Amino acid sequence: MKETNITNKTLIDKLENEHSLSHDEWFLLLDSFTDEDRLYTAEKARAIADKIYGKDVFIRGIVEFSNICKQDCYYCGLRCGNAKLERYRLSEEDILNCCEDGYKYGFRTFVLQSGEDPFYDTEMICRIVTRLKKDYPDCAVTLSIGEKSYEDYEAFRKAGADRYLLRHETANEEHYGKLHPATMSWKNRMRCLDDLKALGYQTGCGIMIGSPGQTTECIVDDMLYMQEFKPEMIGLGPFLPHSDTPFKDEPKGSYEMTLFLISLCRLMLPNVLLPATTALGTIKPNGREQGILAGANVIMPNLSPVKVRDKYMLYDNKICTGDTSSECRGCIEKRMEFIGYNVVISRGDHKS
Ligand code: SAH
Ligand code: SF4
Image (cartoon, rainbow, N blue to C red; front, side, top):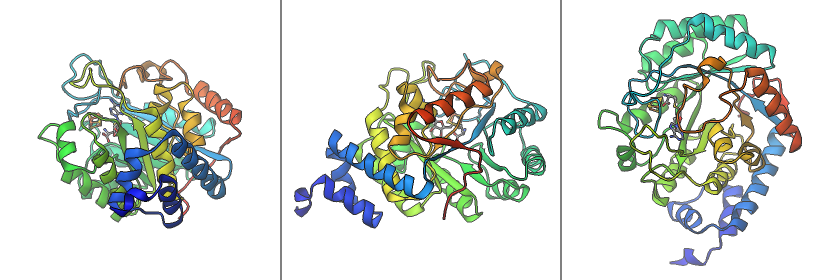
């Protein structure tokens, strides 16, 4: 085959110029990249992000309002099968108070995230979104509350929700089956993402790097899917095992591969909003800084009350569980300044 003669640098240049690669090109690149290729890509990715978003890093305040979940994803500490976890729910007032604090600290996007907890019905979510949009008209509201019907997504959107985060987890149906029980369906996850896009949300998908059973072929499928779907946001973090899940003995994902994929996503979708995730900061103490330097432009510090933080344990050793919202905000600002970037007070919308 001709392609074996193409160097990885040529493929990276092609991605930068054309924003897409073929299946075989993706495979070749992901299967054989070196540290040098990764750093070459990171430099390009950072230059593109600097050109589009400057030295600005957008912050999103994340309120983890319930750790109760009806789903049983094998990788996640919040799965309903984990009987050891002490569960909590925040009241509407608690959620609004977290956002009120967040506004004072300069957050202009609130991300409401939870397990799939039926206690918060459509009406209740709409009420919270409406209230937030009324009290903070200069803010964006992002939901990350899992798989819902088209009608629910439509209702949240009408109430004012701007963005929705729903990682697709894997674009490979067979791989999806290894990460989830048979009660969950890959087709439904993909349907949700299509619905969100059709409803005009700034839509975020994404994957865990190194999730059990993930092969290079799976990541190729992910890149091809995102190349076509064109999400406004992409969440990428290493898989990290949780001790009370069936995947407790599985190895964690690769830090380097995570950074490489961040850079590749920036080349593929130059305007995309890319967080340097908490999981990246958990696997390496300066992982989030390295994520920014590899082309990310968003950080999502926690706004949840300190008393519940250590209960929202998706994976072991999650960082920042003992800090207050104000401490997290200050810490992120210092970390960004240290690498020459500025946290900005802005909604930080996708530039389309
Ligand atoms: N219930 C919602 C939102 C909360 S979970 C949902 O599932 O969409 C948010 C994300 O955390 C998931 O999409 C998953 O990619 C990530 N996550 C869960 N368990 C993890 C683990 N063990 N390691 C790394 N990331 C994990
Ligand atoms: Fe629930 Fe989301 Fe965890 Fe799956 S990943 S168990 S849906 S919180």
